Length: 318
Image (cartoon, rainbow, N blue to C red; front, side, top):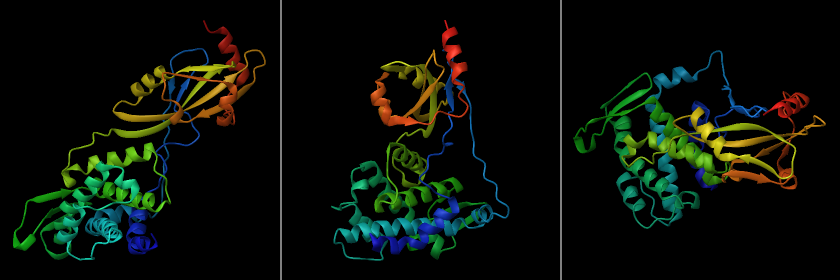
């Protein structure tokens, strides 16, 4: 793996820096977007956002002018990753893209993270095959234009100029995201989970015009926290089907995963405890957990929780 890191160190650093690629979910941490009131009413939906503002940021101007460099850098990262795969399989090293493409379509074993996902392996090879002639044009021929971060590229193999292929600014960002993320997952510096897998699938769907394979039909993945107030009991029950329906109604057209923040309130003492139950434990119609089971999910009670007021609302609810 050291050899792979050495090969792609500069390209991975450049793309990661340009697009600020991280493995963090696109969500605001430690806030609850959907909150069910203590009186049993419909949930309150609050949208949070993080705004970054930099003075003198070089990225926007670079992305406007540097699309050819970003494209070639992204392709080189893909080339080095797949070339490393071939060498791990004992294939003879070659600089010719057509030979590497042919070898990749043969009996080659990819790293387990990719090999276990046929959809990922197939689309990586397809991207490589269809981007190779476009990369050659950008590097060796004048049959491309670049304007405001978007490329128009025609393959020009053996003097034959093909149709113009648009490579948008969004395409370049998706390509960088997929390749930088995969590099981290393969070498183990990031951990693949279901949400991150869905992000890769969604990005590859955006690249479908370039890899020319059928879309995976992955909706834009999202992740959020849901807060529910429940009376102190043992066991504790929560209607997860209701929550899923409400989340879908609030975030239509997205594939939303959520963690559940349970705030248990003693109706008499007006005290509260909190638990954050992860998405993996929320796949049934109803969550039914003993207090002992929930103990492993214990977290601090949110600062905005007024336990006495919540207890009063619970006691006055119909």
